[in-house]
Amino acid sequence: MPDQIPVTVLTGYLGAGKTTLLNNILTGTHGKKYAVVINEFGELGVDNDLVVDSDEEVFEMNNGCICCTVRGDLIRIINGLMKRPGKFDGIIVETTGLANPAPVAQTFFVDEEVKAKTRLDAIVTVVDAKHLPARLQDAPEAADQLAFADVVVLNKLDLVTPEELAAVEASIRAINPYAVIHHATRGDVPPDQLLGLHAFDLKRVLESVPDFLEEDSHTHNEHLTSISISTDKPLAAEKFQAWIGHILQTQGQDILRTKGILSYQNEDRKFAFQAVHMIADGDFLAAWKPTDTRTSRIVFIGRNLNRPQLRRGFESCAA
Image 1 (cartoon, helix red, strand yellow):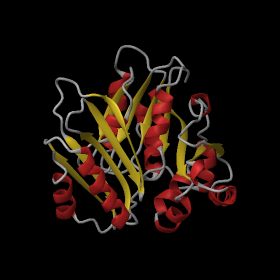
Image 2 (spheres, helix red, strand yellow):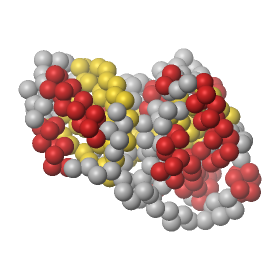
Image 3 (cartoon, one colour):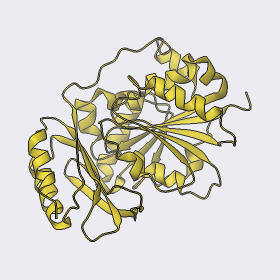
C-alpha cells in the first residue's frame, strides 16, 4: 500500500549507542519528519532528555519492556499518529536495550489497524564492538537482537583492534548471515543507509522462525534490575564526578548501563552522563527551560545493585 508509513525499529543491547545513532538521524540534513517512540527499562525516564531538541515528536514509554507490558501502548501511539493532520515520513521506535525485537516486529503484523497503516521497513541493531563478545555469553537478548536484524551498525570501532573487529564480525555473521553491516565509531552512519530500505522480509523470518507470528512468552535475564534515583537539590559537579568514578571503578563489572540528566550548581545547562560498565562519557545539553523542575535523575541497570547505598551516594553529591 503506497500510503503506508515506514517504521524502523532501532534495537541493540544496553549501551550499544542507540540514542547517539538516533540523534545523528534526527540532526541529519535529509529534510524529512519522523515521529520517535522511545521505550525505557526503569521507572524514571532519561532517554527522552538525551534525544536532541528537534522538530520531531518524541513519545516516551517507560517502566516496562516494549516487547511485554507496553505493546498496547505502542499500538495506541501509532494509531494516534495515524489520525493526526500532517504527514510523517516515517516512525522510529527505539527499544529498551533489554528488548527482544521479535514481539516488537509482531506488532506490525498482528494488529490489523497498525498493519493497514504502517509497514515494518527494517530492524536496525546497534552493536558495541568492545562488549559484544561478553554479551553473547551472558545476555540472550543480544543474540536475539542480532538474529532479527536487517541492518547491523557495528559501533565503537575506536575501542577495538583490527583482530578484535574481525572476530566480532565473524560472530555476527554466525548468527545472521543476511544482515548488512555498517561500521561506525559514534553512530556515524548516513540516514539513507538505515531508513526507507524496504529491508524487512517476513518470508525470510518465517523460514528461520516459523512461530514468529505467534504470541511470545519470553522472559528477560532475571538477574538484571533497574534502579532510578532523583533529587531536586543542585549537585556539585566535583562531588558527583568523584562519587560516580568510584562507583564505576569498584562496581563497573556489575553495572551494565548508567544514564543520568543532572542539574549542576551555578550551571544553566543540563548535563548528560552515560556509562557502559567502566567506560564513562558526559556532555552538556540545552539549557534548562524556565518551566522545568531542575531534577537530577540517574538510572543504573545491572546486577547486585544496592539501592540504599546508591541513593545515599547520589544524594551526598548535593552542593
